[in-house]
Picture 1 (cartoon, rainbow, N blue to C red):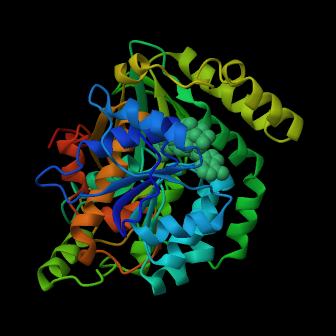
Picture 2: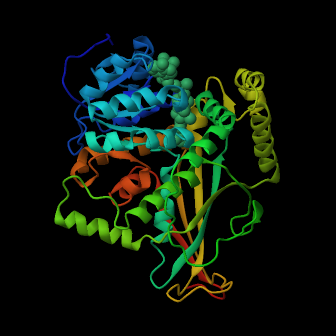
Picture 3: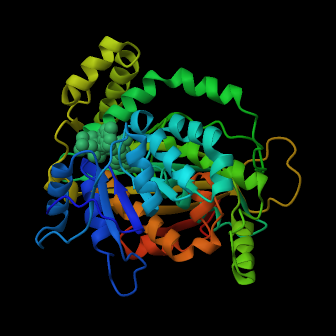
Length: 454
Ligand SMILES: NC(=O)c1ccc[n+]([C@@H]2O[C@H](COP(=O)([O-])OP(=O)(O)OC[C@H]3O[C@@H](n4cnc5c(N)ncnc54)[C@H](OP(=O)(O)O)[C@@H]3O)[C@@H](O)[C@H]2O)c1
């Protein structure tokens, strides 16, 4: 495939960082929809700093077919003029070049300046919150919709919580929804270095995130019936037969941002050019979403699995604090992650044999209409579940590409611009149905009162 610096004016989608481990899976997912009769994706380009690596990624992603004639654009995150060029040629830039704290900001800046839409697969709370603080107003003015965390981080958590909360029929309402994430495979579960590096740098900069939060105005919190729960950080969850440990992942932070947006905009955010029908649909959707306290736990059938997770967490927390420690962590990822991350990433077999289950256990009140004085205990439980294929390289590309297709199909129904978490933008669209059609399922498992099944 020759390098082509196309003169074409607009691409529906440009995938930036397409030569990366995740990027090549995103190309593969996007090609499934390119020029399909019912798909809005009619033009696609891939971009990155190495044309030869991009060509190889395209070849891999097209296999067993020959690579399609799509433009390969040379763009470096360190070269603002190259970023401006793709931002002015794209309707949507899908950013897969991470760690985002290192390479993300110039990409967002270029998209906001050009007024094109931007989606990424970032799982780094600090990056997301810095982008919101720095670019929201300009993005809103210029008509650029900037949505981070459009991957496994954090769409299953966002849509999964909403799915659970919409099962509570008034006057019932949830108080807390706890998500239990179980990663499953009959082979080893392995991630690529990019994710590990993002986690190591996140731990190293945790103080910066706290400083940023202190410097920002407090956002409203949603009204949730009952007392904030005090659940254990570690537990044996008998219903699913797993041990579970609280996970300091991006998910709960992203969900909190969506719930704050909802507290500020109880009917969601108006579309730039939405119809009266869409206005009613959006209002009805958000009226059925009942906010709840939310947390995520990583679950494992064996206690040893939890011990491994704690050990890796401790290595990253201790070594990640100093630059020498970080160098060691990044030089020997397999050693310090006990084999969970590899420089060359997982094999295709390891990817295709992995899957995830995420249970959402909601506890709340069968009648939340009264006042909540004293310590009224939840008397109702609703369990829902999100399941899908391997998280990083199958589910993440599915989600990112479906988010992009929603944008291409329903742009008038979405806000003119601004920096938002995915839930507040994609909640009222057909994203959940699209994910279901593409292998990520949302199921109601049970509704239970304190004494009997409902
Ligand atoms: N949300 C989720 O659940 C999820 C899932 C998977 C991954 N991720 C995130 O996605 C990110 C990438 O992960 P990965 O494993 O795919 O990493 P990777 O294989 O290292 O890929 C990084 C990509 O960034 C590109 N890049 C680096 N510096 C650049 C620059 N100056 N200009 C242009 N491109 C540049 C690389 O280009 P070259 O090929 O030229 O080096 C490569 O394409 C990480 O932050 C990871 O945490 C998130």
